[in-house]
Image (cartoon, rainbow, N blue to C red):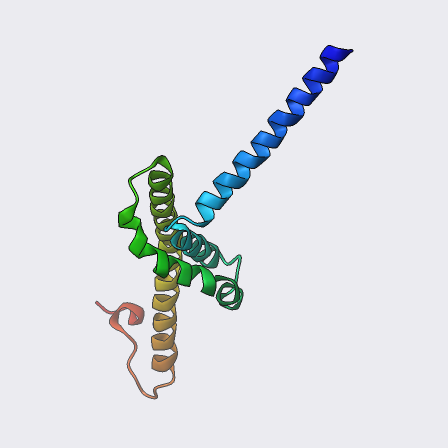
Length: 141
């Protein structure tokens, strides 16, 4: 019975230490010089995907952007830790993700714009009186 009690106490202490470690890690991440940029890149990806609107982004991210600009000067002071490498890699990955998400949208918008121009040309040409039909439509070569 005493072993069970000791084992339970040991497990509880381990859980408490784990919770403390997680809180310390969260604090390190949230105070890291790249944290503001990371949040900004993440929000940019969410905006591209249409998950959040511009209005929602502006309300929640002003302080993060200011934190980023204030902390960027301190980045050179720190040595390159594993956390620094992770934050840099994550920011780059989010930037690449955003670009990959935007590319199909840009192609789609270009296609739609091109189709709109063609439709406008067709519509404008059909309203002009006494205009000869194009050679390809008249059947003459």
